[in-house]
Length: 240
Image (cartoon, rainbow, N blue to C red):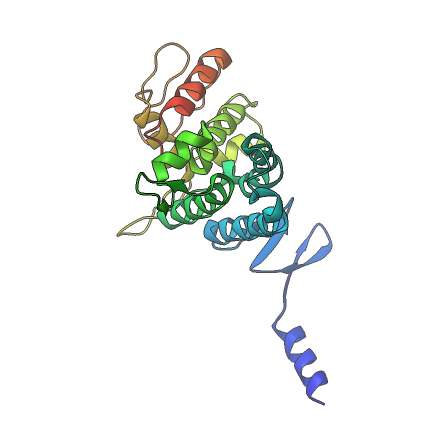
């Protein structure tokens, strides 16, 4: 009796819509192409899913990443091939909040400290590597910087799409409604502008131009120039 009652209650609360004669269930969130999509566009949930997936990969490979007899180069290859892509998947389309950036950084430092181990001081004691020491040993940009580079690369791809492209329309068309008063959630385009501002490339000449608060439609038509901007972003350590 309880099972039947519970089942009827679940069915009565379900919502459906009809699209071209097909009845579809309305849900608050779903996974599409490996990424979590929520009705309220809560990208933090997707970041948490990425980190959880990275943790599963990390714990499965920890016996390979920890031993000192395995060369660091081999460990870094395993990390870059089997762990980092799991976490970075789809992040070029995600708006990163402050807590998301912090969570990504904490996870990456955990993996890197497992790979590099500790450092012995002059007194003979061992200590953990500091954050800047980890980045120096890694020799390349970190998670968050890599996500920002991917975000700029994806923005260039979208800007070069035809004007009738659905993806380009969603990105560049202004919504009809106004935003509510008070503090606003960060938007994807706002973070693109912030990245370009850090690199000193907010305003660029020729066929590339970013003005105001929106990434204009003509941005990245010159592919070579846009690639140069991406490389500048990759080399800018201030993106953290």
